[in-house]
Structures are given as C-alpha cells and as structure tokens.
Image 1 (cartoon, rainbow, N blue to C red):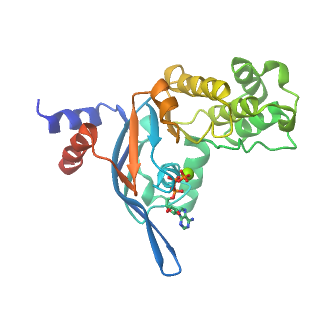
Image 2 (image 1 turned 90 degrees about the vertical axis):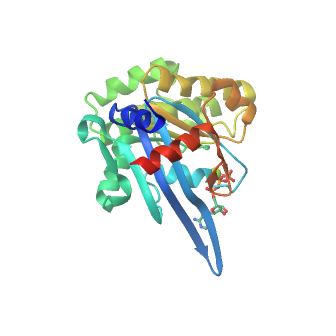
Length: 256
Ligand SMILES: Nc1ncnc2c1ncn2[C@@H]1O[C@H](COP(=O)(O)OP(=O)(O)OP(=O)(O)O)[C@@H](O)[C@H]1O
Ligand SMILES: [Mg+2]
C-alpha cells in the first residue's frame, strides 16, 4: 500500500477527527495586515492528546478559535468528523446558527483564567452547561463528574473560594459534561505553579485516554508538553513547521 492509499484508507476508517485544508485567516487593522494563519494543513486523529506550541503571536489561539467555531477563516476547509451524525462536515460552510450549535454541543473549551460564573456554585457551574446541552439528569451527572475530579466535597463553594487548580478542574468538568467531540484548551495552566500544572495536564490527558476525547492544548511550556505528550504541532508565523508527519499530510491533502 503506498502512502496515498494509506491516508485515504485511514480517512475512510474514521480515525480522523479534524482535517484542516489550506486554512487562512488574516486580520486587518488600519493599514496593517496580519496573516494569523497562513495556509494551514493539519490532520488530527480521534482521541489524540496534541500540544500546540510556538512563540507569542504565531497563531495558536487563532487556530483553536477556527477549529472551535469561535472564529471563521477567510479561506480553506475545516472538516470535522461528526461520526454517526453525518460523517465529515466542513464547518466553514455552516450558517451562524449551525456554528453556534456546533460550538455548544461538540466543543468543550478551557480557558487560562477558568471563566467560571462567579455567582454560581461549583455544582451549578457544571449543571448549567449540562442543561444547555440537554444532558439527562444534569444535576446527578454533574455531581458524579465533579466527584471523579476530586471536587465532591466542594460542590457548594463559589469559584472565589477555590484555588486556581480547583477552579480549573471545575472548568474541565464543565467542558466535559456536555460530552463534546473535541476539547480545546488555551494555556490552561498559564496561571498555576508546576505542581498544579502537572495535575491539570494529567486530568486533561485522562480526557483522551479514559473518555476518548480529542484534546488540543496550546502551551508555551515545551518541558511540560514533552512530559505529557509526544504529539506536538509547532507553529511559526501562522504556518505549521514541516516535519515528516506534515509532509505526509501534504501528499494526502493533494490526493483528495
Ligand atoms: N482580533 C484580532 N485583531 C487583529 N489582530 C489579531 C486579532 N487576533 C489575533 N491577531 C493577530 O494575529 C496573530 C496571531 O494571534 P494569536 O492570538 O493567534 O497568537 P498566539 O500564538 O495565540 O499568541 P500568544 O501566545 O501570545 O497567545 C498576532 O499577530 C495577533 O496580533
Ligand atoms: Mg494565544
């Protein structure tokens, strides 16, 4: 089997979750044009635990945003595998409503500053996400997940009564409770010390290992990335740096 055939077989075997084809995103401000994504091609397998690395301003957040339907690229395709709900769909062709539904149901987002709702308790924060996604028995399901995440004794606390690591565990539970296809985390440990960061990385890794989620993490921290995953994407100036994997992808992209 040659490389092209191998990739096509893989595609149809449903092992791929996300496929980006020549994705470009430009920001224009006054007379200045920034090429945030400069024709990105990338293939991400289902259940991967992938680290996205690169210097400040290289396009990491933009990449997560276009995959998560928070932003729309200028050109290119973003194929997402919806599995039994229709196979691969190009989300760049989605209407605003379709994109909102995609974001709400299929994407779990974890931010650097947790973004919990301050007036809701730990349990209520997760429960709200469960209700939004029509999860059956939202309260029981949220409780059970928070217990798994070692937050069972803090269900009635408010976010300001928690440490940073605890707040991030609640935020991860909130992202997972809706049973998304893809979990996106942008510098999820940027605010935490090394010990707490390691705990958060371990938890995020369990989302791919135990729950089979596709997890993409943006980080500046190469050491931490190396500790937890060998699956890295390096970005510079809006482009993915070539490696063996990406050059294989090019062959594949040209073949479909
Ligand atoms: N809304 C926007 N308007 C104008 N320019 C933007 C906007 N968002 C991002 N950019 C520019 O696009 C480029 C990529 O930004 P992006 O936020 O993706 O970088 P990043 O790799 O996430 O950086 P950091 O590590 O600092 O978070 C940068 O040059 C940035 O200034
Ligand atoms: Mg960023």
